[in-house]
Structure formats: C-alpha cells, structure tokens
Length: 457
Length: 100
Image 1 (cartoon, rainbow over the protein chains, first blue to last red):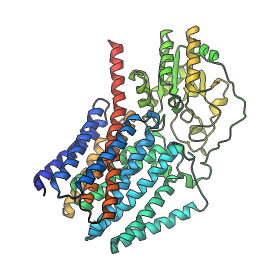
Image 2 (cartoon, chains in turn yellow, green; image 1 turned 45 degrees about the vertical axis):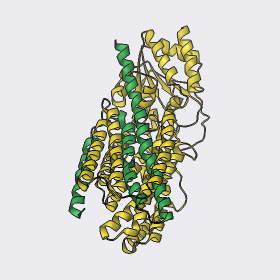
Image 3 (cartoon, one colour; image 1 turned 90 degrees about the horizontal axis):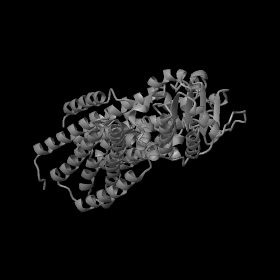
Image 4 (cartoon, rainbow over the protein chains, first blue to last red; image 1 turned 90 degrees about the vertical axis):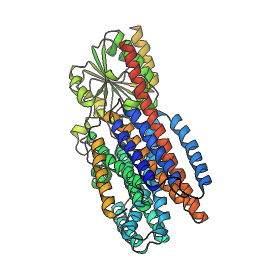
C-alpha cells in the first residue's frame, strides 16, 4: 500500500530535483562546493525515501539489506582511498552506476509496450553497458593494472565498424521484438564496445574519458526515467548528461584537443604510441646540495608539481621546503597545470591535503608569463605538462596541449625517479637542455635532502 | 507521462545542466565531476522499483545486483566528493590562520 499520494510523491521528487540543480550550482564555486554536495546527498535521500513511501513494493527486506551492504562497501572505500587513487575510484563508481541503469532497463523489457518506451530501453541497455565496461578499463589503466599507453590491434577500425553495425541491428531488434534474449545480446555488444572504445585512449587522456562516460551514464539514467515513468530519474540523469558534456569539453580544451580526437586520435596516426625506451643521451645530474644552492640563491622560484610528487606522498615535505625558502626571503609560487595529477584539478586537491595555502597556487595562464623572470623552476614529479614537444613537434601525442613554460626559467631543476618518460610516454627535450639539472630519486627523499641542505646554507 | 511532457522536462533539464556548470574553474573540475557522478547514482530509485516489482527469483537477484551497484555509486560518490571538498575547506582555514 502506498503511504503517500501521487501529488505528494511528485512534490518530493521535485524537491529532490531542485536539490540536484543547487548541488551542481554549488559545486561550481569553492565557497559553496561542500554545501552543494551535501544538498545533493539530501536530494538523493529524499528521492530514495519517496520511492519506498509512494510505491507498493515487495522484497523490501532484501532491498534494504542490499542497500546496507552497498553502503558498508562504499563508505569505507571512499573514506580510506588515497587521494592519489581517487580518479580510479570515481571511474569505478561511475561504471557501477551505468551497469545498474543497464540492468534496470533489461528487466523492464518484459513490461515494455510502446515504441518510445522500447527505444529508451534499448538506449539505456547499450549506453549503460558501454559506460560500465569502459569505466572498468579506465580503472585498470589508472590503477596501472594494465598498460597506460594506447592499446591497438590490427583491424581494430574494422571491428569497430562491425560492432557499430551490430549495435544498430541489435537495438532495432530490441525495439521491434522486445525479447529478453535480444536485450542481453545488446548488453554484451555494449560491454565489448566500451572496452574497445577506451583501450586506444592514451593514459593522459583517460580523465576526459571518465568525464565522458560520466555524462553517458547520466543519459542512460535519464532514459531509464522514461522507461520507469519517473521524472526524478529523467531530470537528474539529463542534468548530469548535460553538465557532464560541458565539463568534458572544458577538460578537453584544457588539454588542447577535441573530445573526438581524444577518443579516436589513436586511430588516425600510428605515431601516437610513445616510446618506453629509456634514453641514453647525456643529461646533467646534480646532488641535493647543488639543487639547494640553486634554490637558496634564487629570488624567485616556481614549483611545478606533478603526479610523482603525490605518489611519493611528498606534498608535506614540499610545503616545508617552500616555507624554508620563504624564510630566506625567496618568493615561491606553485604553477598548477590544469591537468596536473590524473584529473583536472586533482593537484589542487592533493596540495590542499598538505595545507598549502590557496594564494601560492597559480593557474597556468597566471603563472606562464612569470617563468621568464624566475631564477629557478623546480619540477617535482611532473613531465608531460612541461614538455616542449606539445608546442614543437606536431607528431607528438601531446601536441597542442598547453604547457607550463618551465624552459623559460633561468635554471630548471627536475626531481625525477628515473629517465622513464611520463604518463603519456613521450621523451622530454627539456631534460637535455644546458640549464637543466636533474636530481634522481624518490621525490620525498630528494625533497628532504634538499630541505636539509637549504637549511644548512 | 506523455511525450510532450517528457520532451519539456528533457529540454529544460539540458539547459539547466549547461547553465549551472558553464563558468567553473579548472580547480573544481574534479569535485564537480565526482559530484555529478554521485547524482546519477539516483538510478538507485529505478533499481528499487524494479526489485520491488520483481516476480521471479532470477529477476529479483539481477535487480538486487542493480540496487547494490547503484548504492555504491550514490553513497560512495557523495562521500568521496565530500572528502575532497573537506580538504578545500581545511586549506581555507589554514590560510585564515596565517593571516591572523
């Protein structure tokens, strides 16, 4: 028996939808972001409670148990995940959402009757499945369970074309016939498609793909709202689909490429697969003391932090070094590339974790003109974001990506683990320049050594 | 719901979705993506509906799988976003502390 009437149900769903809109709005500005997210959670809670009150449901015991299990799994995972591994967790969460939408639509196939309904079912099954398997591959790439470079095999374009034909055929069949078997086959096609779409994407472009899959899951959820005749799903899914599309484009333009190029780029040239070869060209490597002297007698230092800094958990040491330099009257700013880390804005989150004040973090456009007047640019665990190949070599996979002009500084110091190329797998010419000094080692070790050497100056 | 209503909901939601995130700085891309990701976890409502109306065991099992996945998306999504934003908050406090 339903406990509330249709009007009350509709009002509660409206309330939840408004919460979601305010949540997205809030998340767009630093001040209101946290409140925005909490509003979103409130909207979700209201939505879920409403469905229990408004519908006559059986199996409520089971449903509640499973919700409990799901929460018990996801809350500790979200609480304990290292901030460096957060992108893959977001990818995973996105994937299971898409998978859930696909299953929901598949199960509704038996009750399907009208044409529009069946189209929405086919759409949700397919897009949800693509999002699920695509996210799983993304997760594997970010977790480095598999290679981060583009994976291609011979005849892949042909396979993709055949799969697209199969998708259309399968979808038409589901719409025409509406049986469960065809729905399941469409689901499998979607799963294969998701894997093949993401495999050729190179490591550095993975964040854009997460965002794209996020938007796709949103659309799948919107379509499932049609299937279930539920306005909240329709509105919430569409909101995520639309905002996710904008966000994907914003991220892609931050990396200087189009979304289509990100997905299909690997098909066009053969040259996008970078090299893993370590170079044996000569470089100038220095000791921690050399680096300390460079830093200690500088007037302006720009730090370019990268994922390597975060992996080594060296944010705190980095900040101590910053403070030590500032005590000597040296001006230190951080130049943050929009895609530093593994996701746009990831580095800001990581540095925030180490209490680095907001004021010293400067965005790319702000900091780029300052490199010319900087005495030292200290690049810690970053590579691709300062790689001049993005400007100079059109064949390079990162060509066109805006970079930080680290090379304009009088001296460039790289703290690196080895000569291995970065996430995108391309060699960095900057490493071989005359005014570049390299200090090899774990970022945290190197920074502590430099820190004590600076203090001893 | 008739087709025109659905279309109205859809088109208006697209515009709202475009509008609310149109001017976001790259600093907040990660939390915003994560927050949007959590919001589509509302598919949990759909999963609950399907599970509540399941008329055979295998349907119930599949639907409960959907409930599980959707819960992970929804709950995990909001928690991890909050954790990211907590750090932004901490940073603000720290800089206020320095100023005073």
